Image (cartoon, rainbow, N blue to C red; front, side, top):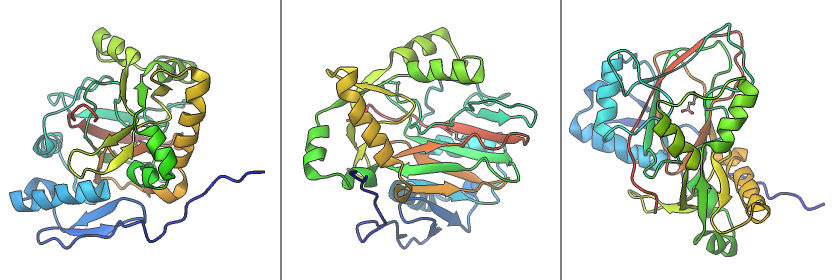
Length: 300
Ligand code: SIN
């Protein structure tokens, strides 16, 4: 039997921290992710913010403890990252239309929760979000973690021949399959914020399957488990083995980092070079999170 090639962190993994003057950065895993300590987000000077952004592009996921942000502080910090993205699913919370609640009550059980499959945020948009920021208010005693995978590192671990085969391809990102799955598993369809959002999300977009990061120039795989439904110009039979192999390749444990949330914590990630999921593993406990997304540009 042919065994799948499982990667172990090697000399080509480099998630080491740069030396910064205004922030302390501590890598959290071999593949991606780092903790930023010694600062509160609303207090970052312009110099500290520039270092913070550099660290975000480098580590792809940053988290900070003990932030306890208000909705206004959350929204104000996210606005420093760039204009807000369209959120196809939620409407914002009282007075802060860019701050979107993700709340699951203790008495709510479901076979599917928001974000529980591997995905990049809203890739069905023409200009999908660059950064997502998530803050924890109420956290289950166990479960409710978030896990990320580094899609740039995963691309580097493909053979040059396979990389060359992928570069010209376009992936069809659409919410159609997820919409049907959620409706079946959760017993009701995911609500969209408007009929226009729904139509655009279900139709989706063709995007480069290998995208170049606008800040770092790194190439990264751009496909996921939730929204990638085909490859432009290919039949389902032709595209499925490629999509299936790549999503298993990207999400193998060597390329991942898992965050155990604490109340008051904030995390943010770069959707252009990561996938993430929030496992549906905390039935019986309440989880209250708030999310903002920053607009990105069309993937190239
Ligand atoms: C998300 O997919 O943006 C949410 C992930 C989570 O709730 O952990």
